[in-house]
Image (cartoon, rainbow, N blue to C red; front, top):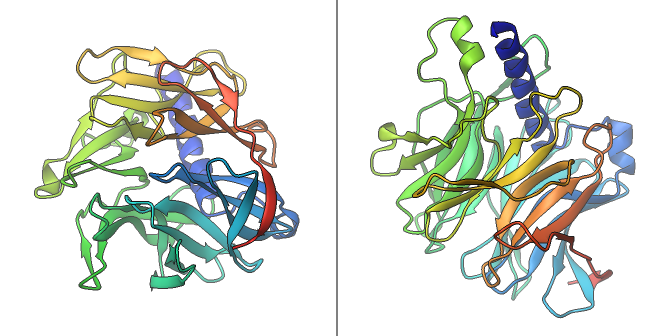
Length: 351
């Protein structure tokens, strides 16, 4: 049993590392990145139903916009070949789009810049930069500030990996005051899926539940969980326990409007061996009912709930076990039926 726990712990750590590599665009070698073409795993949907997603053309990162009812998509942002674009995020009212740019090779120079694109004027403004790894951003419900995940160090904490971002905490940038605030002092090994509660008073993230770790053996019992963090008292954070509890824990997630249900990603075949398959599930916090939504036997990830239709949009990597990713955009209803790939229109001209 202990050997199984150790194996699952190692695989879970590898899963977190792969997620971090994808976030920082380091899955590919330099030569492969220069040739990289196609959709990445990052996208968002505005209040008006516009889809923004990151793609690459011969290694150059771009943000494409797909407006409802239009037969072509438009290029909103294009950066140089030595950059990657992370986490395009619409403002709550849909009038602007924030995104992160960083270097493809952070071991040479680690720098993250947060941008804001005005979708009406097309003005692209640099909000702030940091000599650290900013990996995710999210607007407050009032659009008065921008929350972000920041990794304070970029180092090697594990003998099975190279340098990676660590010591994660939650920060907030206030637009009017042009000031930053650090909300937590957790210095977590990893932190993902930054989500702001509808009232703006609570933040949700996914991270290791390691509060009880005292020895090296305890580390093998650590699982990934969703945490609820009240901004007025961040130290009173608490994990959301999903039953039945999964041995490897919960990875990416989205909070359904109303806050009672969670769409989350987890390994569906942890006991079978071979390549792990990641599916999406729905958990009801009131009834504690857990329902598997997808059965694609691939790598389903990054659920985003369409603000108008309530449909769940998500990314599927059709080549998760391979070296090069093959991302496709899918959607389904909240009950997991009517699963279909989203057909993206032909590319048009730049905005």
